[in-house]
Length: 240
Image: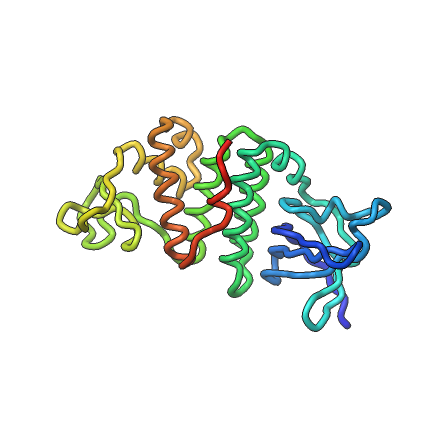
């Protein structure tokens, strides 16, 4: 039964028996990692708090047939308490980790892991509004996964932008000739915001109005769920 060490972000947990917990992590080099942390729900556990959602940890594990066993955990990024302390940050973080788990179902990807760690760090710092951190993560994660949206030139015929009509199924903005009936038309500032989120340009993103942020959020959510091919439960969490 080989022993190994790995770095990972805790995506979710659920109870097992009276004292154990199954932990699902996105690891740096192994992709999704599911392991049993024995005894962590006891008050005497020394590392239970290190294996809560949104935490980044260095773990030592024994390989098992179906589930590995986590024997040690050292905190690398204690983002869980700050994210969980604020409902808006918690809602955004829940969307982020659920998306990360869905995207990680294939081969391991260090860029996806590093993007996730960066998003949670930014979310916990509370200097950027949670919805912008969430939407920036969604667009950039999908880009890493191979579904880069286009927000300048027409994604169908290549006609030079700017364009304001968006067709999620085609991957971004389209010109008037390529626009399909019923496709939404966004404010020019919303298109600029989407481009800023995709590139990680927080200075420009922070200049957006509430209306522009709302329009961009709708496109980011629709684009994500289109490519994941089913809805995200975290999007259904009630607003305050």
